[in-house]
Length: 467
Image (cartoon, rainbow, N blue to C red; front, side):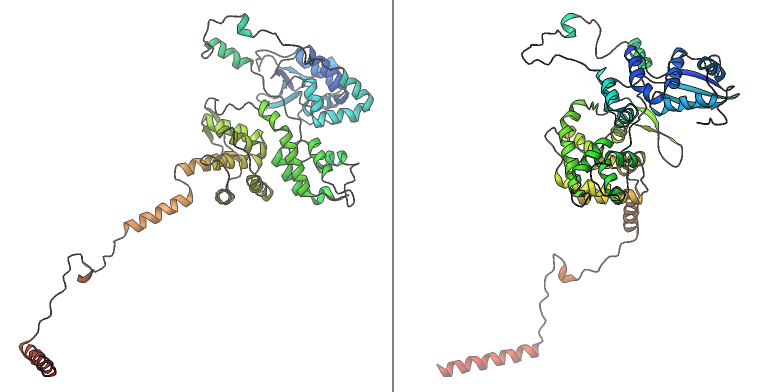
């Protein structure tokens, strides 16, 4: 691989570490990683680890790449190829900067634990393709563990506080302890896995090569497959298993409804495991400053709850986030079929990414124990109109809504001010509609009264004659 122009023997580099490395990591590197990255990359990795500085001085500890070329006995193109291979498998990150001249910083990471490597879709399949089935089985067997599994044995191991006594306050550790925790905290390993929203179609095609799938099915069903993968957070191997279960044996076509059902079954099987492994600190993090994904580069200060929400929204699938959010409200709550249907439909419209939909779910469930499809669509449409396109913008929209600063709220407020600000017209109330109204008595003239009296006398005289 040809090196870029700025990567030269004269350019400086510095090695730092984001994690610690032990003897097991050395074995993992040789047995599992080296067949993939090659011996030069493995030697580069080990060499850089020997040059890591605990407290690096960026101006004093830098050295030219020519020293690496001499140590490894390779050309600059070979060194560059080894470097990018380490980056690709998550063993190293490379940063670059220009001060007086161009220099590079190599941030070193420990290999994955053997079990995590073998569970990883990309790494394990790549190793299998490289060494073949027999050697793969031999390498995997090198990391076999044998814990006690006999059911007739009783665990009599003592707990820590059964043996040791602690004088300090566990809930309020000393500042020195806190500082040590901060400086020794390891960075998470770089992700090698395929993003569920960006399906590796080439790898998926290889996994389904012998499943009898139609030649154009993956292309024709691309939108549905991507939506299901994102909704459930499926790995490539799990996605391949689910698609294989949904293929019609006669036509080779994918039954999307059957695929959704299989994905739900796959998730349900692992739901209890997720509940055990997921450490939800529910906003226990301290307030911090994080960048917002907005058109301007302002730094937005998030609350502890918002930081935790962002973390969960970006790390969970829609299905898992819905379950975790409802269980946090009440452990007895569950995801109902109508809720899953509404969220799947929203996901398939492809108007929001997974993390933004998760923030939307959190907002809808703040004042309710279940998701109403009409309300979900109403909020989603309002967010589309407000140009919400990221979880950070979604949080900003929620903030604006709570503060009464969204455009619909402002329009309603302005309308009320106009209505209450203009002069009010007073309607004339007729006398008969008033509460104290008394009907006037008619005035009869003397002439009319005489005529009425005469008629009354005639009526009386007529009655007497009949009697």
